Image 1 (tube, rainbow, N blue to C red):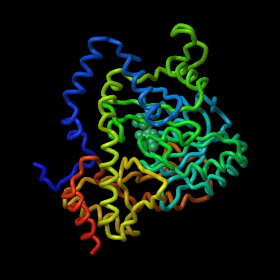
Image 2: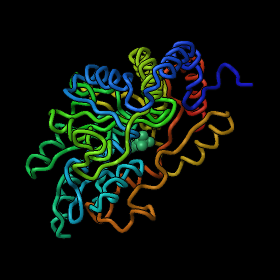
Image 3: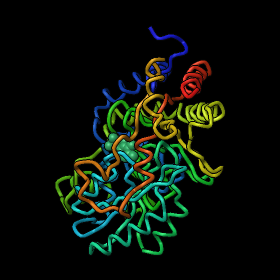
Image 4: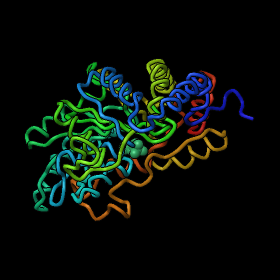
Length: 378
Ligand SMILES: *Cc1c(COP(=O)(O)O)cnc(C)c1O
């Protein structure tokens, strides 16, 4: 039995209890109409999320990874092309570039936000030229829910005529200067993996773009490159559609979403107010709103193992995102780096730790987590 003070890392059950009967009704409706692929709920979700983000076009697909992949296909990224990605991210960010036959160049991140460092990006662009690659674009990651510094990254992008894809798999619901994630970059990819801020009960993803030609092109690419119909193939595409069942689930979860974002923000503020300053929390400028997919903090050098032991003993779930930076992974270590070392990325991988974060945390649970952490450094 779990006691009242013990939090889950991510709690999907409390949310399900709130919406179970509505979700069941919505799924039964899909069973009745039988349009399991690209049914009416999918179109409704695309429309609702386009209006939620104030983005001109939203096109759904099968996962966040496919959303990134389809956006690279839209730009015909291929051999001899360089795409700049942060090394401190989930594998999908670099994977899609390598799958396209292009070269991911790993960029360092900033110490205070864990997001892509514009200066390191400049160095990465020089590396691309050294390797005789064509710099094409940037995939900026909104790590742990916090939008990347798009204004600064855009300056670099414009100077070098690069596009920017926002990997917003973790940041749906976040914003910058009151502009919602979905509109902050030229193109945006998000994920509905169950543990993301807006999660389905399976895989799903969405792309946000600015013009109707790109939207039409992405709709074709996600359905085998179809032209006037499925059996008219005008280009090489994928099978990457959002299941109607998942769209039906997401439409119900969307009704809770803004309230849940407020709860996440409240929990994060409480952590930040109560945690001992020896734990470095991300510093967030006031114009940035994180979606708080995860709450991560940095331990002082050499103290993470001790902190994790204290959390384990108190039965507080915790994880390390990410223990091995992408540029040190077997699958990706052959690709170029922006500079001889990605020092901040390496340091974060040794110091970072994520603690429970979800909309249903209680003050009692947060106090217990904070006290355990603060005691552990005494
Ligand atoms: C989860 C995640 C993805 C991939 O999303 P899927 O829907 O699981 O394919 C991509 N990038 C980042 C940063 C993620 O966290």
